[in-house]
Length: 298
Image (cartoon, rainbow, N blue to C red; front, side, top):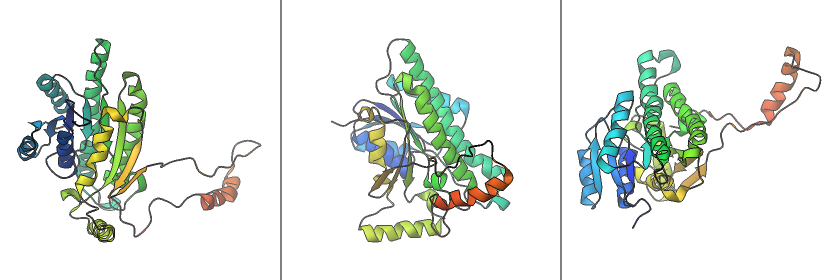
């Protein structure tokens, strides 16, 4: 018995890395898994079947409106319903702002932010129809994937960080919008070593150093999956609109963009000379800027 028994779960970007780990753990917990990726997924499906689980392969392009719609429709047609969506698919096209071109920008934003929107939209439309028909889907869940780069910043990833920050904001808003349907919507900001991070030398080195100190593989994608499976299960009832950080044995709730030190001008709006006088003092009282030189983030 598992916390996802007989639930139907879509995991995007599941051919390898973090997505593969999610798919396998959902299967271990009893879910029927749709293993989605534009890369071949038959290997992951076989791994799940070897575990005694049930899985089907999907090569739909989730960054395209029709592809996401077809993914949801095919899932419902095959399994009869859809309970959990894990938006995990992503790519990297790193570069400094002054050398970033439109192709790199659009490619990353399309897969991460647009892909998350497309799949979530079509899943929510299905859940709304079930709700209107009087047979709501039990405990529908969405788990999105943001990143420490989107929450805290990382030089050379303006496209990736902007898309991931957008996903964090999207998560909070959609959680409020879908609450009336009983949908839980959360996001994770994971740290792990995958094919996507292979070229990020400083990041890889920092994670490996952390592994040496911790005595276990801090960078393993397997570390991330239990949190996602729990968030995608009925057990997460009441937890929604949150972003969680997870790195190795460290699990936390992200609280970025809280309102910091504030000043109020009692006699009306601020003038330029008043801003010059007060703003440096407010900044001095605030917590440090999230982008700290020399600290690798991804």
